[in-house]
Image 1 (cartoon, rainbow, N blue to C red):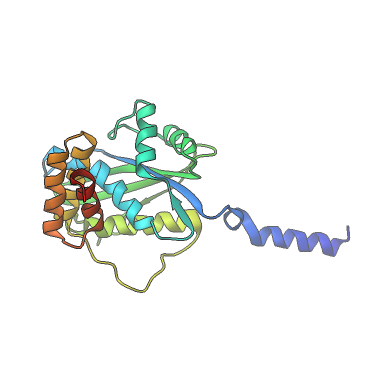
Image 2 (image 1 turned 60 degrees about the vertical axis):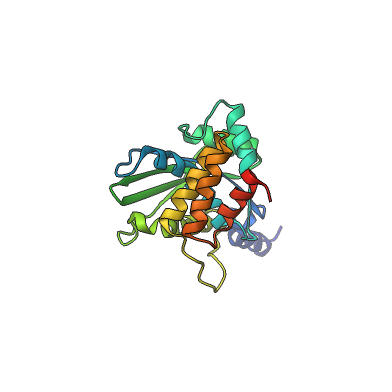
Length: 229
């Protein structure tokens, strides 16, 4: 092969690169998050946020053509099959194993800490092929560390996960509605009680979430699941 042809092939390989050559859409499994030591609210709320945070991440990442999210019920069933509850500690190797089993290219898990209103969220992006952490994305902007901005914190982390896994920035011109922290907490409590099989209490919290924020699709879907149409 002539040198010019070899040079052309090399340039093409560089242009494609691993990220560009990646199969699209990229499949992601969002796993539970761990409370690594929170204070200032009832512990039940923090247990609930371990479910509500990843559920909100899934909602924020849904709708991007570059991504496909593994269904949360499938993730939950796989966790149960491994004797891992919703508040289990997931290291990179375990996250990769779970992600691999559900057919994901990346598994996203992490932890959070609420210290009397100062909120920190860390999301680990794990490569399911080799079990390595690709990136840890956080709300490291000091202007976005207030519990009152919890939805915006999750939203920002979701955007960073999207960028790291697909190389794409969020699309859309419309400014999304900001879900109040109280509504998000009540929705999370609904998820917690739903996983415990208490549909009555789950319904109460989903209803409270809708009272705090009537235009809350996830809370409405939760209410329909536990009460029926």
